[in-house]
Length: 541
Image 1 (tube, one colour):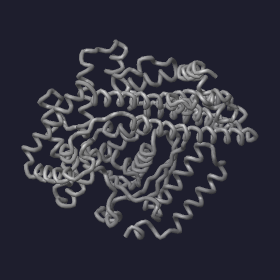
Image 2 (cartoon, rainbow, N blue to C red; image 1 turned 180 degrees about the vertical axis):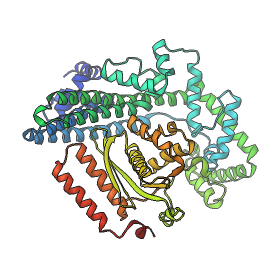
Image 3 (tube, rainbow, N blue to C red; image 1 turned 90 degrees about the vertical axis):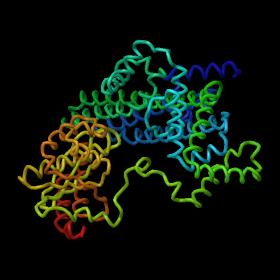
C-alpha cells in the first residue's frame, strides 16, 4: 500500500463511524487485512476507536440480554464470549488512548515558572491563591474563589481571546437552556438525529458534564423494557423484546456520544493550555503570576523570606539551575513542610472532602437515640446493564421489606431504600421517631441535605429519576420524625446483612435471574438467618 492509500484509509476511518467499527471488530476477531490493521494503529484513531468500541460494547451486552429473556440457551454461550471479547478490546483501546495522550502531553513544550514562584505556590497554596485572586480581580476576572486558580488563568485568557465571537443561534440556545432541556437535547441527538452543534467549543464542557445523565436515561429505558418483557411468558415476549432492542440501540449511541464528548472537552482543554503557554496569552499569564508573587511577598513577609532563602541556597549548587530547576520545587516544599509543619497545612474546610466516621465512633452513632426510636437498616443493589435496582431493609422490631425500582446510580438506589424503609416504619409506628442507617455516604448526605433544607431539589444531584424524587417528596412531609445516619457495612450487623441480602434478592427477582419458587426459598432462608442472630444492638454495643 502506498503512503497516499494509507493516509486515505486513515481519513476514511476518521470520517466513517460504521467503517471504523467494522474494521475494529474484524481486527478483534483476527480477520482484519494487514493494511487495515496498520491504519488502525495510527495515533489519530486512538480516540475514535474507543468511541466505536463503547457503542459495540453496549450492543453486545444487549444481544446477550435478549437471548437470556428469549429462553435461547443455545445462543448464549457464543454471545457471551463475543461480549467478553468486545469488553476486553474496549479496555485495551482505552488504555492505548491514555498512552497516546501521555505521549502527546510529553511532547508539548511548556514554559517553566521561576523556582521561587513554584515553591511559594505549592508550599503556601492558600496565601498564594488569595494573592492571585486579588491580581485577577484587578485585571477584570470575575470575583470568586476558584478551586484551581492556575487552570482559571488559562480559561480567563481563552475567554478574553473569544470575547465578541458570538456563536450561532442554535449554539446559544443549547448554551443558555436549563439542564433538563439540555439533557433532552442529548437524548434527541441519540434517538432521532445527530446534533451538529454539540461539538462547538461553547458547548463541549456542558456536553461532557451532562452526557452521563443522558446515558443514565438510556439505561432507564432498558430497565423499563426489561420489566415489560418479564411480565410476559417467554413465548409472548417478541414485541417487548423489540422494544428492548430499541432501548439498547439508543443507549449504545449515548455511550458512544458520551465518549466523544470526553474527547471533545479534552481537546478543548489542550487548546486552552496551548494558548495559555504561547504568544500574548503566555506573556499576560506570566505577568499575572509574577504580580501575584509580589503580592505574596508583601503580605507574607516571613513565608517569603523562607522561600527566597531556601531557593537561593539550592540554586547555588543545583546542576539543573541553567534550565530553571524544573523538577526541584517538590523537594524544597518538602523541606519547608518538615521545618514548619504548622505553616504549610492547607485549610481543611476549603480542601477536605467528606470522610467516614472514625473507627471508634462507628457504633457511638446509636448512643444518643431516644428510647422510643424505631431503628432500621436499608441497603440497595444495582445491575450493570440497566437502571433496574433492588432494595431491602430490616428493622429492630422484626419487620422487613424489599422491592425494586429504577436508579441512575448506587447512591440513588440507596436513597430509594432509605425512603421506603422510613415511610413504612412511619406508617406503622405513629408518633415515633424513625432512624434509618445506611452504609452509603452519598445516600446519607443526599437525604440529610433534603431533610435539613425541606427542599427535595437539594438532593437532585443524586436523584435523577422520578421514582426516587417522588419518594423524597413524600418523606419530607415527615422530616421532623426522621433521622438518617451512616453505618459501616458488611462487618457482621444482623440488620445490615439482612437488608443487603434482601436487596440482592430483589434485584435478581426483578431482572428475572431467579425463579419464583427459588426466590421464596431464599427469602425464607434470609428471615431464618435474621431470627437466629444475636440482635443488632448487641453487636453495636
